[in-house]
Length: 188
Image (cartoon, rainbow, N blue to C red):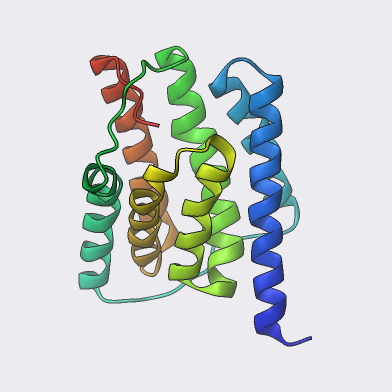
């Protein structure tokens, strides 16, 4: 079997595993944040147990700047372009959401998508898989374009080093939690 086919099969397997784990935990655990803590805690631990580690690379600072701008603006822009706006309050406490969305989910998504899938299939394909996973779990298809842009930007940043992407991902998720709680409108 050629490596391209193996990479595609692995990536689709990861997509399925993440979607099933998150969907299952969200249907069995009433709290969204607690469900994510369980699902992403297990998924992230599994990725790390498999020996997934961040790669090293080097790129020009222009790619990092463009990537950061796309990651920062991609999600809200993508949602705005299709008229998708938050319409419900955050379902969990600020403290719990900061812990889960700002740490557990970020580390797990970076390990799974950024360190496992992205080196095999590339940034655009990973961004597509990452974006598609979300509506498979929650049915909210209008967020897909924004999620694609978000991950595409993080992928560009990651070419300069995983700590930069991790820091931006963490900052954007925690900022989204704080904004959501301040406005009373869930950003996720």
